Image 1 (cartoon, rainbow, N blue to C red):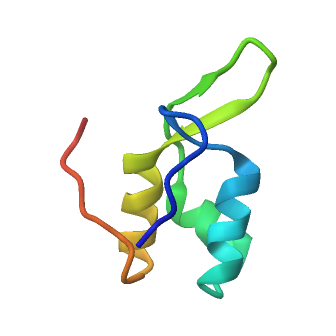
Image 2: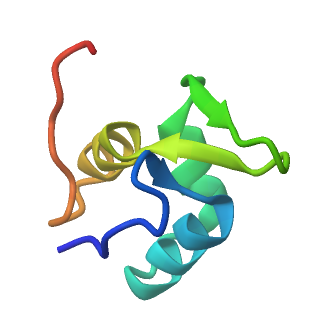
Amino acid sequence: MLPNPKDPNGYTKEEILVICRERKIHHMTFWKAFGINTCMIKKDGTLIYYQCDVESALYSLKSKDGVAHLWD
C-alpha cells in the first residue's frame, strides 16, 4: 500500500523516490513508466505529481501497489 502523500493533491519528487527505493524500483525506470503527465506547481515552486498517475506508473511496472486508472 502506498503511503499517503503529504500534500492532498499528490506526491513530491522526493516522496516518489522513497516509494521507488522501498519497492526496489530504479528511479529512471519509474520515470520512464510515468511518462508525460500533468502536475501542479505550488506557489513555492514544488511540483506535485497526482496520485493516480503514480499508481498507473506502478501498475505498468507490475508493482503490487499499482492501480489501473481510466483516463482522467
